[in-house]
Amino acid sequence: MTKLDQIAADAESHDFAAEMADATWEDATEEDPMVTTSLRLPKSLLDWVRERATEQHLRPSVLIRQWIEQRRDAGGSGGIEELAMRMERLERAVFAEDVRPDQR
Image (cartoon, rainbow, N blue to C red; front, side, top):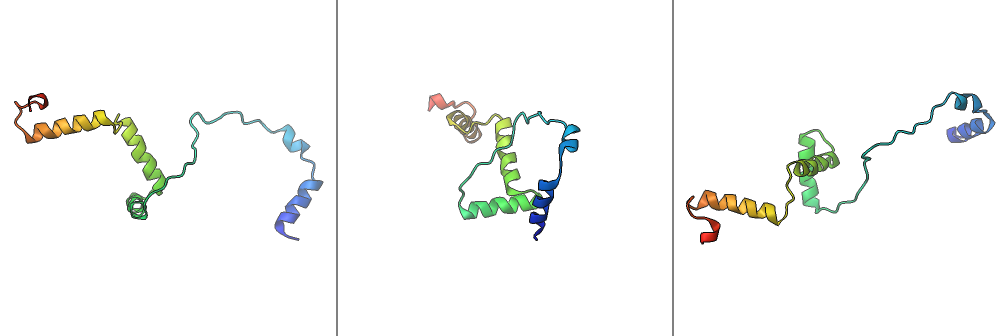
């Protein structure tokens, strides 16, 4: 008889009523539960992420989540507005301060 068969046989013949009487119901739920998602990455990029994660003693999924959270918390949408702001900063650094983008 396997260990699993032994556990099943014990459960079939055991009365759990006493244990159930003292039990409490867990009704608290996680406000923001973790969910699993699938992400397709090129092998070279995943290898790079794994290296960064190993350097920080983290799992790759934890590191990716941290990067996403940092981006979110920094308010960066990665959209057109952010790109325009970055380009403007670059232009100010490269061109004379008195030249505005609308004067070119």
